[in-house]
View 1 (cartoon, rainbow, N blue to C red):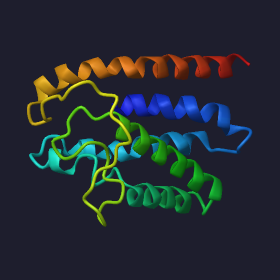
View 2 (view 1 turned 30 degrees about the vertical axis):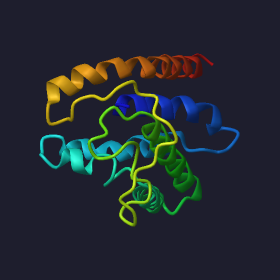
View 3 (view 1 turned 60 degrees about the vertical axis):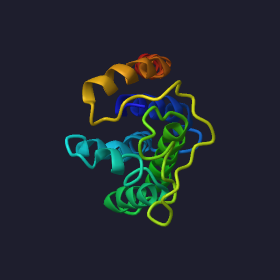
View 4 (view 1 turned 180 degrees about the vertical axis):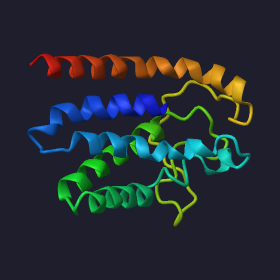
Length: 164
């Protein structure tokens, strides 16, 4: 899923939870997008090796949530909101992997284990690696259709909250 897709899913899931569970929506969304910071490595040849391992694991998610919480005066709400967003990101990426060049799913326990986790893969077929950027982008374009409902949901929730 793209970073924009993760943003839409995090917002769509977090908006209804923000009041009853006292979830910090901005931190849930930040936590939900943070693992994709590894896309900064896209221009480098090591991207395929590191993608979905270096930042797509429980240690990174917990460390990120802890950093957000400490940055915002040690708030438990901020920590758990960012943790929820990050865990959601890992779950989604474990279900959608069209480039299994480094394993299918996410390296949930990296660096303790190099194994990848995916309960099942909803992605049809295998796309070229990101080293073939244009071919990979073309192949992954079909995956955007999984994201469109979340884009619409996030927009509807956003506009509904503005009008009420």
